[in-house]
Length: 165
Image (tube, rainbow, N blue to C red; front, side):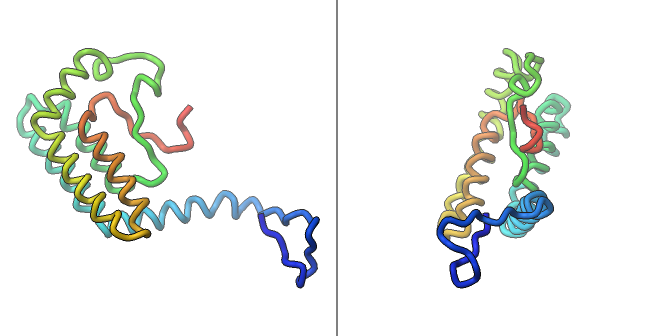
């Protein structure tokens, strides 16, 4: 809330001026866009392309099609992560499905051995590079979130942050 200093008509006990509603609704979207733009230019492009390359390799082998879909969804999330989050589909829908049950655990185990740890190492390396500067800390935190997702992507859904129940 905005409060005028005493020299401009404000005083110690005065109430802060409320912000207009357009400021409260517009500024978060502007900041998300700016953070996503900086993210994309300073490393998100490379990691997103890494996810899409993994998805392409999985799609070439017909057996890897379930992993390919996860790679493309998380690759898109890796391009523009601010304002979105990855959640378990079981938490999102309230019911289990093929990817959140025992087959999902088996799929995530196979994924971890074949490609998950490579992508996780890439994200952790990028996070360490981002943590060098204070400005890079939010980007490093996003890389850590993506590294966790890289270890077990099956059964996850990417949703806008405000639509989560």
